[in-house]
Amino acid sequence: MVDISFLSGLMHGNRNWRNVVRLVHASDKYKHGRRMHLFFFWLAGLFAISGLCGPTLTFASNGFGNGDDEAAVSHLKEMGIELSEAADLDPLLERAAGRRLVLLGEASHGTSEYYTWRADISRRLIEEHGFDFVIVEGDWPLAFRVNKHVKHLEEPRVETREAMRHFTRWPQWMWGNREVKELIRWMHTHNEELPEPKRAGFYGMDIYAYEEGIDDVVTFIDQRDPSAARTARNNYRCFTRHRDMQAYLQMVHRTRDHCGEDIEAVHQLLEDNREAWMADDSVQFVRAWQGSRMVIHAERHIRGNLTRGPESWNHRVEHFYDAARNLLEWYGDDARGIVWAHNTHIGDARATDMRNAGMKNIGQITREEMGEDQVYSIGLGTYKGEVLAARQWEGSMELMQVPEAIPGSYEHLMHQTGMSPMLMLFDDPEEHQPLLQPRGNRAVGVVYHPERDATQNYVQTVMPLRYNAFLFFEETQALTPLE
Image 1 (cartoon, rainbow, N blue to C red):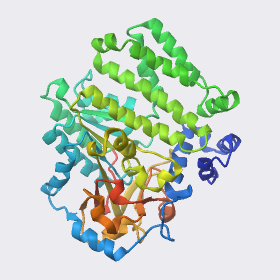
Image 2: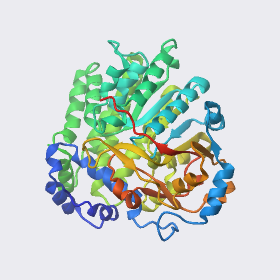
Image 3: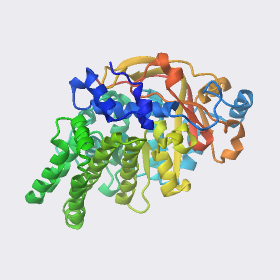
Image 4: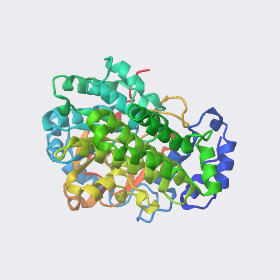
């Protein structure tokens, strides 16, 4: 096992690169594959979110609640909407429908209700309000293969379950589950009779499948200009020639040189040929163009671990925003999209202790760049239940029990209302004074230890400022994996 206690210090720059190299070499897990570095990047972010980076917000001494609990519960009872039928979501849809981006969160990557309710909201936004795409916290290259199925662009045609086999990366249950399958199948059917420009798309905004992204880019260029493809392949080799990303980071640390400019040159090649290659095949050009941007952000994300602070985390979420924004541009001036990601990504980071570590997220960036009137952010959470997760990065999937929420947390207050499912609408944060003190808001990752839930899985939050709305469930069930 690796001693992970250094990670919170890493976020402050209290350790140097030699500590990272020594600990990575000490890890038996590292011997199992190239992607161990992702474990460190994710975990560094998780520990920073968990409040280990010295938050400056005013928190209660127990770290989970702040303010008058009785007044907060009374307020929730007065303002909360208990949901009993589909029409009860109408107030939420009315508010979200006019925004360019609707951000749909989740408090874990393994809970059925989060997926089914987000799917229901997404279907209504697409069918009733003409939304153009769903973009999820999955890798761009892999999700684009599913997008071809959704939009009837694949050859040969396959069944939905077969199309979803492209979700090959761990944790497979995150997208390879029945709940997502039903949404993909519905989108495929919904699009069947529509002209191609009107078909709703399904995309990914994550960066970890950069090898597949490189293959997509080089293949696209090679079909149009083999000489340019050789140049692109050589440029990418600056990045991929290393036996793994630890070796790449060692090289960058030793030489103070990196491959960022070589990778960006490939994207410039696509830019220089945009008009001609778009006219030739617009679908594949978008796939390659955003794929090349994904590789740029992936390299920055990896290299960011050599610097002090939150750079690695922020480069990843910058691609989240980049991919969503570019899809809006590809679809046209009136385009609107739906984002699926963890609450830690879609809830405005400025209303959490993430801000004190300098960490941003797509919830913050979209509000800043597009305007708060163009974005609608919906968080989801539970009091207790089941979840699919693993006990270590790339570990085996387990069915785990999520314990009852910590007293003083938002989930515990909502539990005391006796209302579930419950919808809270935060149209004007000033109308929610009893909820404006920082409290814990649960966040469960793909790596989870229920016995440590109370100390590691709460983000200090001012909920009415973090979200536009919040959906609460008293007790939730685990996702149903396809395999």
